[in-house]
Length: 161
Picture 1 (cartoon, rainbow, N blue to C red):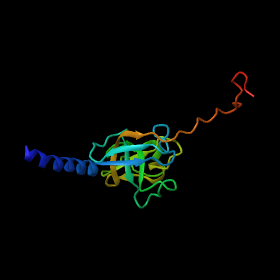
Picture 2 (picture 1 turned 90 degrees about the horizontal axis):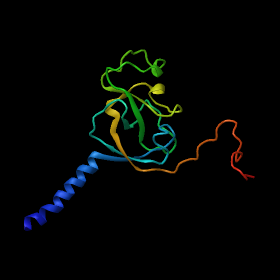
Picture 3 (picture 1 turned 135 degrees about the vertical axis):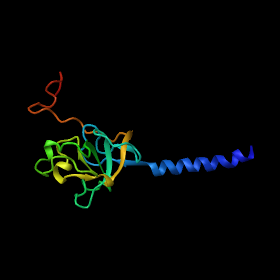
């Protein structure tokens, strides 16, 4: 019984250390991942997840990539669209002459068309990847949807001023 009381805190400390080392919490900054993730969303990323097309990843921008929006922090969040050996996506044709994604690199795009990503900067080294997003821990404040072009404010509500 005494041994269990002694081991329990050690096991708990070991699990906490493993989780701290294996997990990363990041806050989305900017609109590049809308509509999947919005500015202020807090995401949980695991460092040891299999990298696949379609997964959202967290990474440190290589020195050749300008950092994201002001105050973005050291991490960027993008979606993997091509892995080593895949054909180079059409959107990158002006950035590279390669036909296939080279070994040790991936192609990442933001979900928004306004995203600065591999379409701007080229291939991302796999070594720059920090983790794969597995959950949204907290949703940040949402902006109201933009009105459709030509819509008049309050025009469709009866009794609107």
